[in-house]
Image (cartoon, rainbow, N blue to C red):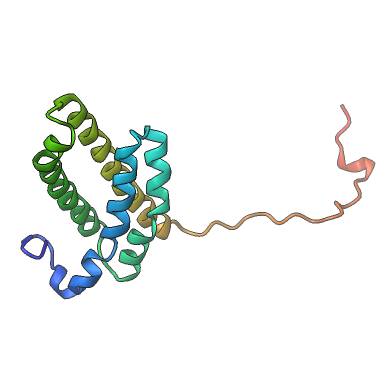
Length: 146
């Protein structure tokens, strides 16, 4: 990650901060792969991992840097999956491909969570109407006669 020339992560994060979220992420991903999770289960799991992009936002990292971290994570995990997954699936490439599809969906959803966190932070506050209780009494003149 530090070798990525397009980012300046060495000035933003210590090594511990850079990899701090990985144990939780890998644990969640391994659970999803073991139980052959559906897309809705994957989406729910990534919502639980929202804290990483929130922390990165508060640290001042740009959205593309956080997304790039996740893309590097995807690349490293896919390499690991193809190297070690062959043994775990006893050479069944369809099962391995399905695991990779779920892992890709997981990372895509994590990137979507990054977008949600950053978009929500830039959304202007909207003044909302407050309700008054009890409602004011209406007069007959408030209603037009037809």
